[in-house]
Length: 332
Image (cartoon, rainbow, N blue to C red; front, side, top):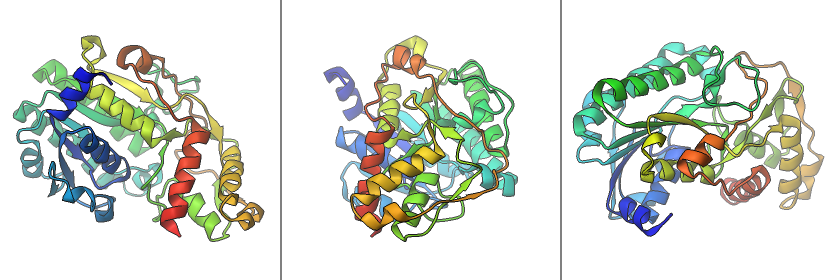
């Protein structure tokens, strides 16, 4: 970041929805670090108070406990805000299959409320968490932003609808938006507990207990696992970009490499064995494939590099070592 961009961040008031969540809390932390005034909004449905407990002592951080399904909460959160980073959502493909109505209420109804509140507050730019699930049944690799297939889950539908609404709000109300299609983000503060926990923290916790994680399928499915610091960088680049052609677009937010689940398990055991050699002997189990799972995911990040000057610093292995270290220190 250059001096001008850092000055813009330090002089801006930025709303982060889903502030107590994994990605949201990391964004809040970085924004405060660069001098921004930060407002956090969360209802603690999936976020945790412990994720923002230290932030709440910061003089430039304020927090609103509220729900994006409540338009009044959204209006309150957007008061005097320059930029919105909209992270609040109900993630997880299986969760959306089990309860499509709630996923839709939060991810579509809540998203629309946030767009309306941002429009009404005169927000300069609305940056939102989109999803690689939008690629659906498209088999082309790597994934390029303008080639998508049909969604394979209610969750994927909600995230695609977000992109359609964002595009429409630019055309109808001239609200500038940037959508970031996250690819399997992982890192510090990602919750290992619960029925819908992401694979990396879930597997780490099981290995640390000498329990066998269950891989859905034969382990050949692959993902573009993306370390949290790359995602934080992408959000900040979306705020400070002065490239007009970069606005009102969607971008793959990833590293651009894919790792199979079998390869992931090998790496996890290797890195965890540095802390406890017995973990290396823990076997994995295999179960049926999950409904709605995309077999392979690999992002082209050329568009983000060209238009947003995105320069991811953490490949899978470098990020995984950092994540394992954090989990070892915080889950023991």
